Image (cartoon, rainbow, N blue to C red):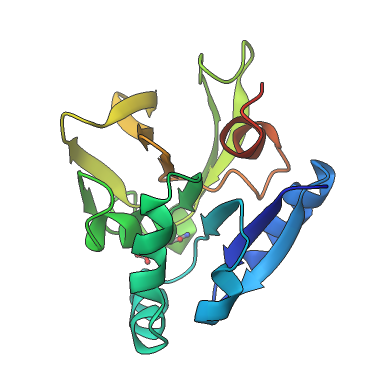
Length: 181
Ligand code: GLN
């Protein structure tokens, strides 16, 4: 049976993540309530507006569920606002600054070297991205852009300041959810 990956679907780029999961033949489930966490094999916290996502997630009682899920050691992928949320709720030992790469108009694409995932470069998009200012000891830096960490891992949690889902690469989702390259 295909693995079931939940996507926190309060706001943000849920459809784009679902499309990548489909390409990998993984099932996706939109997560909006506590009961949606049942039987998930992995979880995605997508990009969007982190203040909106965290306020609504709190109101719907989902922050506690995300924390519980993280303890289960199942894989979690947080992208952009998802990374901000993970740091904010204490699941990721990192200091991040919101919007530190500039405004919407300053959004850009980049070809990243991520040796643990791929020999060749991976094209991704930075959209009003947060900057990772520092990371704790338990955090591994898997990729940097202009000397700044942009992809980090803390045990079962992978977090990116960019969007891997927009330009169509499946490699990052494959790495975290299928444990494969
Ligand atoms: N700028 C957004 C925030 O601070 C994040 C942007 C994104 O997720 N693309 O919440």
